[in-house]
Image (cartoon, rainbow, N blue to C red; front, side, top):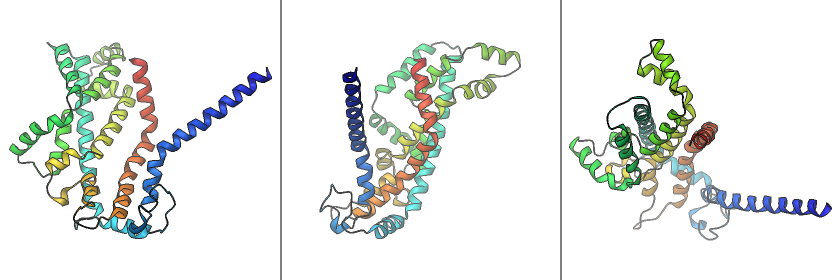
Length: 284
């Protein structure tokens, strides 16, 4: 009996030690980034793995990050990113919601075929879609505008449509029929009956869309050419110039500043994210 207790205690200690080691391994890149944002450029890579700056230069680095790069301030890059992210996220989630509602609640010819077509698009790399998107945006004279970055997201994504379809299928259609008896139309049923039920799924989709659009680098690189319209992902790349002095301190400081909104967004809505994934797993 004593041997079993000792064995369980040893296993518990080993489990916690391994968990702490894995957790530290996952958090270390974030700690390194924050520590590097306080180092001076001269000592940045003398002891690259150290989290303790040899020479503190936090004020200079963050002031440089706030001033921006290429004559454009950090707030300009931030406002561009916020506009593109919020607009694209709202359009993406809303269109995905309408599509999922149509596939699960409206009977029309070929619904299963079209739903299968939507699911097939999940296997198409997003980079493949950039060329036709560029051609369309070019014909609409939207290239090098913030609208060009937000508009492609307004057609929803197959992943969100699939996730919302799974949630809608778990909601009894008796609720729709009861609402129709009370005089509700399709739009009223969607927003008054179904949306409150699938709220965790909508928040989950919003979180994923927020992160995907916020950190997107490829589309802004292709669609944008004016620095004043750049997002943060492109602004960070501007700090690196192979033909000039690289301001790594400002680069890391701006990276920390650009991470703050995403961390705050995640902290506020993480409860809904866990609930949405858990409920989706149960319904699946």
